[in-house]
Amino acid sequence: MKNITIAIDGFSSTGKSTLAKQLAKHLGYIYVDTGAMYRAVTFFAMENGYISKDFFDKETLINSLPSIKLHFEFNTDLGFAEMFLNDINIEKEIRTIEVSSFVSKVAEVSQVRAKLVEQQQEMGKNKAIVMDGRDIGTVVFPDAELKIFMTASAETRAQRRFDELQAKGDNVSYEEVLKNVQERDYIDTHRDDSPLVIADDAIEIDNSYLSREEQFQAVLDLVDEVINS
Ligand code: DC
Image (tube, rainbow, N blue to C red; front, side, top):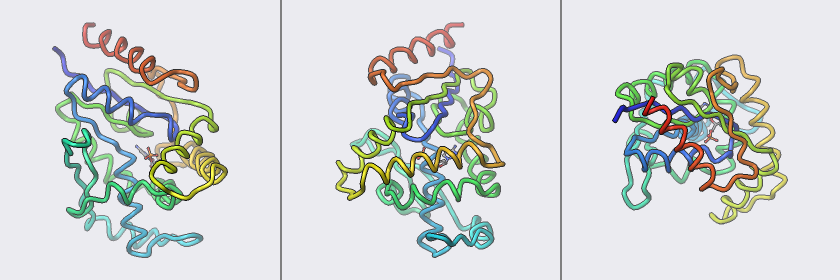
């Protein structure tokens, strides 16, 4: 069977990673969550005091980039690869609302993007990969055989993220989560370097009213079409 590259882009909390994980498992492909990489760099910046509310020392972060080593390690119990920063597992630390509130600022920095894009291209050089993010079909793998662009209303997405955070015991209000989703949408679509846009050849899926299973089936049909073409 032919190995392909599957690029999944879209707004935050559209269920990209859920779909990407399901697909990778089904196809026996590698799954890469590129948002986790931007979150890891953000966590590094927070830990070192380079970013906080109303403060961002972009230059020092840029100068520190060579000392940031990122890798993923597959966790068989969880069924997905966890994010490591300089050999420390930071999978939990990168999923907080604080990291979410700073990450778009860090993702705007071209030098950060260049470093992460290079690593992502290296991970996907042998194909058989499902990668999700914001610029996968446009910048990282413009030649990907299958590109999916996922959308859902901001309210639907905020409710999903709110439910997830609550389940983890994160004490946050729905309004705060909705505000964060809307702010990230704005920054992600308006930044100069690699803004979130739909690739010309991407297939758009609005999953506001689709169940996970319906969505998975629809995408599997697309994968079959591409693999057998
Ligand atoms: O998918 P996520 O919510 O974990 O992504 C976190 C942030 O990282 C998101 O606000 C935008 C940024 N990002 C990006 O700019 N490019 C990517 N390929 C992936 C994420």
